[in-house]
Amino acid sequence: MFRLGLRRFIPAIAAIIPLTDYDILPDTKSAAELIKQKQENETPMDRLYKMFTIDEFGILSPELTSIIHATSAAGVTGALYGGYMRSKVAYEDFLSNNQATSFPNVNEAKRQLSTQVSLGFAKGAYMWGWRLALFTFSYVGIVTVFSVYQDKSTIWEYLAAGSVTGALYKLKLGPKGMIVGGGVGLVLGAIAGTISLTLLYLTGSTMQEMRQLTYQLEETRHKAIREMKGGSKIEDILMDEHQKMLQETEQKDKEKKT
Image (cartoon, rainbow, N blue to C red):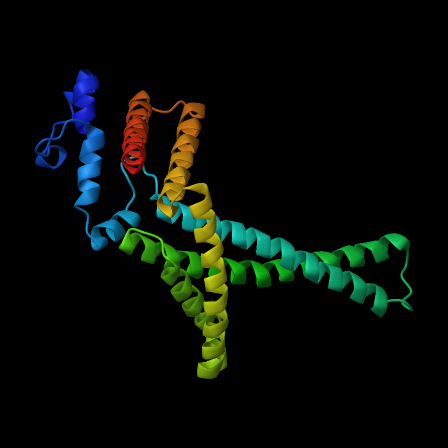
């Protein structure tokens, strides 16, 4: 979809990148309009396919990027919290269980204490990290899939994500546990959805715009990495052209809204 723009502005590159029927649509005046037309003709399955597709620059879609970022942040947060709590318990247990213990020297006592605290931190980080990461991955993933399929954000995907995630979290407790977990997840999903949609409404933004911002930040990061490694100039040109088209499309959308 960038070849039309390259032919217009970069003849040297366009000469080795032939245009296809996919690149040209009737009454297309710019690459930004081309993107807009394709977006208007997209079906729900097209949007889902695009969500799980890597683009020409090797960058994940904004939706997958937001899921990965949320999951990673949850995993790190859970690991830090769980590690701190378990290490604190390990420290207190060591002092309580070794009040009458005679150590060869002070350094040996400190070494054993440090070992117990480190093991406690590792166990807590593992127990909390993967659980919170999996919970967040399930919740954010379901919300995102529903939002992409409908091409809008509503309270219903938050309710569905909360109930399904809560039920899966209590899967080992059987049907009764899953029902309770689903009910709790439904309530938490309603609260989270209400807060998220309210904030978006107050700021005049949409979830799609937030994901697009994440995508642009990811593009900028990749470009910086390529520059540090002496990356290809052609890739930089493509990235700049891509960024311009995204900005033009967003600007036209805002003008239509106003």
